[in-house]
Length: 78
Image (cartoon, rainbow, N blue to C red; front, side, top):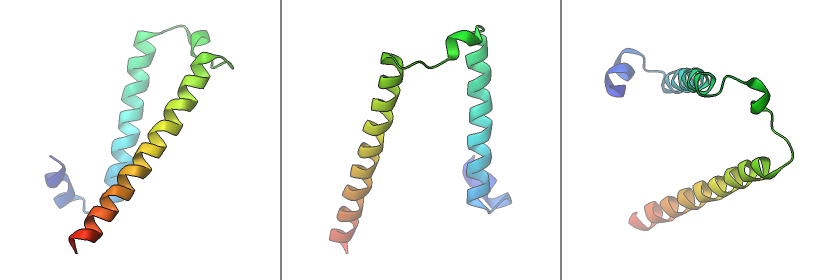
């Protein structure tokens, strides 16, 4: 599907941004259907916020490690 889309719209960055925006809107709609009480959406300084911060940091370092591994692997193949 993406190859067909990229043939018609060759700007990869615009396609990626558009996909992210539509995914965000779709996720928001699902979240509103799942939890209609907006007061429960507020983040307080509690374990929920710490879990989110931990997840962001953990995934960031995993992503960096993956990029480093792939870069080294690619350089060794040359």
